[in-house]
Length: 368
Image (cartoon, rainbow, N blue to C red; front, side, top):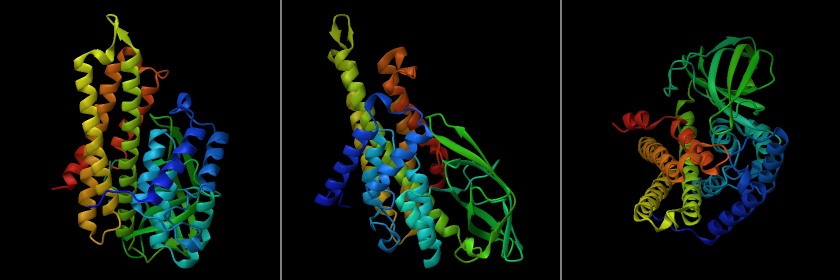
């Protein structure tokens, strides 16, 4: 595989880095966003063309691929920023682009690209952990469309999404279908909550929500392959984000070792600290390589191989992310556990990334 970047890649990465430097001051990274600040940053990402990066040109996008998405998410990871980028642009946008008719794409993708609309994929349910395929939420046929009955849990950024892409058991054929549901539709109940890393997720109940036929994406019962592809794209993006988080984690830890003194000398003078930092740098290179592998597998015409490579990358990210976060906290001493110490925010984000869409144990099982 060719991991080299061309001039366009470098220009994109530099533009996102400048945006992050301006929108996410170092001392505020990892802190909870107010709705107003989140909206301002979202509008800034739209102005930079990031929200439509992978969308077709006729839908207001730039037609860029997973490698470009990887570069963007790495820079957002370094700043602990990006908000709902993975949930809305990478996953929901891909699902609409892959399953939606031309009319459906024109209905929603331009608004996603302009920042006027956020979307989220409502995938998981109670008691199933990461096994999203065993869907209990029912889509029952009614005159003119379907009625949705059930509950989705842990929807990333579900309480800020205006459009929910709901994976349901289609009563027409007992297969899986995806329905585009307005978050404010009658019968939809969204209960948002804070996550460990100061972001948001939601539990969503659907009590007989009426959805007309024009809001089913694709053919009845044939959505599973597209949902798996969107999920893999989201996981690959999270792996890339982890690379940016770990890179910043190492930078901040190295700065601490240079400035913190013990026994009259900077901590960086002690060989054991040097060895630990070197081990972290080696782990970062491994994460970079696997993030590249995952990104380049997303558009390959081999779903089984794609899932295998993405799962392999997620295993490494889940294992190494947790270990590196704890290592950095220990090297900072007791203050590394506090919210006032910025290293704790990077460690928390790595812990959450490790659990989202399957932990290490789950993805190891997918490799067998």
